[in-house]
Image 1: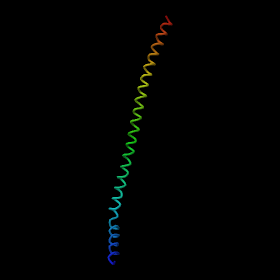
Image 2: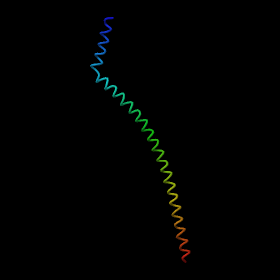
Image 3: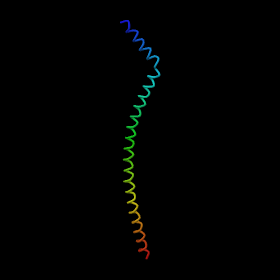
Image 4: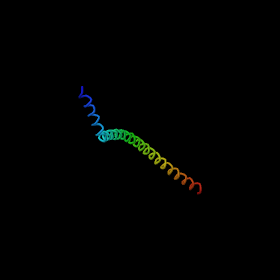
Length: 86
């Protein structure tokens, strides 16, 4: 029983002398946990970016088709103007 207080004091002394090591290990664990959540956030951002790229492609395709239709209408209007003037 007399050894118990001495071993407890030894353990407390070890903790007191190695606080920097404990703080470092805690920092590494915290950093690793933050990196893990950052990877999840990166995955979510990548998914959103892919969805936006797909939507942009669809919009660009639609705009291209509209531009072709507008050009066709302009050509038709030009032909009608020419026919009316003659």
